[in-house]
Every structure is written in structure tokens, then in C-alpha cells.
Amino acid sequence: NDMDPQLLDLVKGKVNSFIKWDLVRFLRENPNTADTAENIAKYIGRNAATVEPELRELVQSEIMEVRPVEGISVYSLTTDAETKELLDRFIKACEDRHFRVKVIYHIVRGMR
Image (cartoon, rainbow, N blue to C red; front, side, top):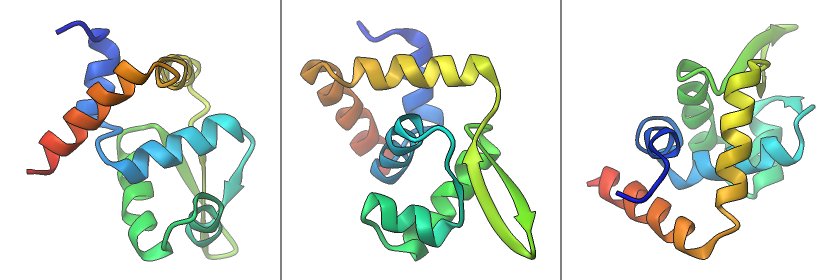
């Protein structure tokens, strides 16, 4: 109840898995990244087969964009300023241990 409602909606509806959390963190730290699922998976230390569906969901929720380059899907962070500002607030809030615990709680609860 003490979480910012916009951040709570973000966690419950869009950044609702640990992989998506890793992806959002990576992309906010590297905002100019535009790459394949395989390469992004390598950057975050995860398997491409598990990362690609999460990337597609982030595209559907308008956190990321995808475009074909020579027949290959290339993913990048959204260019929408409002969404980027919300992600910045989320990443900044994640610096607080208590906030991270709440995010973990909501992700695990959503996995059931």
C-alpha cells in the first residue's frame, strides 16, 4: 500500500518477472542499445530462449520497440519520454532495499 501507484502498476503489469526486471535495468543503463534477443540475453547473463518471449511481452506493453533489420528482430528501449521517465523512477526506487523486497514480493506473487 505504500508503493507509488504508477510503480506498482508497472511491476504488476509490465515488469512482472525477474528477467524483465533485468532487461529494464540493463536498458536504462544502456539506453542506446539496439540489438538481437541473443545478444541482449548475453549482456544480462541469461539464455536467449528465455529472454526472447520476455522481450516480446515488453514490446507488447510498450516498454520496448522491435524492428526488422535484414530479417532479424532488433530490440530497443521505447522512445516514449513518459515511459522512460517512469522506468527511471523505477530504477532509482530499486536502489532502496525495502522497495526491492516489495518488487520481489509482487513478482513472486504474480508467478503463482
